[in-house]
Length: 352
Ligand code: KG4
Ligand code: ZN
Image 1 (tube, rainbow, N blue to C red):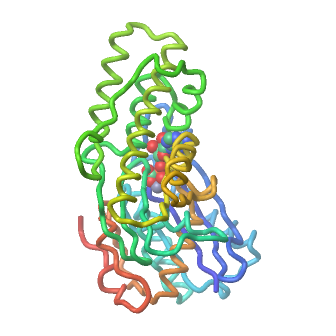
Image 2: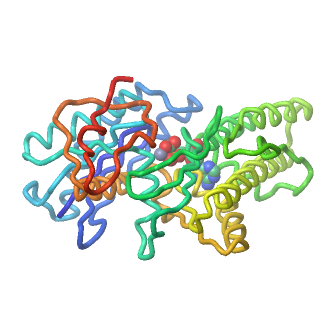
Image 3: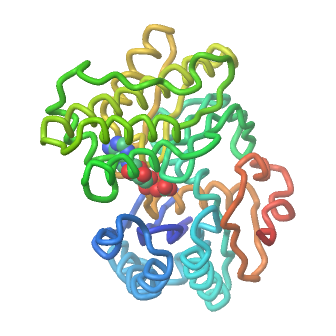
């Protein structure tokens, strides 16, 4: 059984093929970052147009690389949301058209479920139930994952996502987009402790996050310095990364204590952050728990996670109709449960 996965929710075109026996047999990724860099962020119309240009040729390439014919493919999974509406519509239209032509199902996948399941594509996946931290450019959410498709929101950011805060602070420091890897790189030369930034919302109970006050704190610090030397930038990047990572560590620890669960899964673009990985490793070890991360190439957006999530949804009985609809906003706890439940009805995308 082979499933094609198509990811077009933002600024990466990802196409992959997951095989039930062999695992990933094709995994192609094209990043539009160079097109958006001059604008300091993703320009939705440019993103949509570029997905139109790249997606079909990449499907042809992936099929050739995997040595597949259309008759070998059991389903086409695509990101149905959340994400940029125009970009999502490109993937959805191509997936549904191919599904009609090849007479196979097209399955709409939740982007964040894709990120989550990418962390379970390992020889030793964590057993359900577990706690997941989904931390990307658009989301910072703690979820209790009871089973495949059964997700309960424990807490989330009340304003900026952690990745968004990395991107905005990077911009303030004159660093390139996307900001997360740049901040991490520059912070390596930072003098520890020259600046100390707040750990937002850790002083009061609860599992919600807020990063916009921290962002303003950084902006004020930058203004106080006047013009910034390379060392100032490194020291600010160090303090900012430290504050975000420590805040996330505190909330993850709280979520483990609150749920009594002993496996923690971290997924989404920010899960690539090495300091975050190291701190969560130490925290979970101290608590006698385990932490699981996606492979490095599966942290940021990719087609493999959509192909794998599509395979699991196909096996669990999801069948969508051929109507082309996407959900730019789509709370993950509204997803249908896994095997045995009526995934079809609750996965019908609604208007947003
Ligand atoms: O999951 P993703 O590729 O796209 C979304 O679904 O949003 O995440 C992208 C985000 C960006 O904000 C980027 O700055 C952040 O992930 N990111 C990182 C790192 N690598 C990517 N943040 C911190 N440290 C990193 N190493
Ligand atoms: Zn993502």
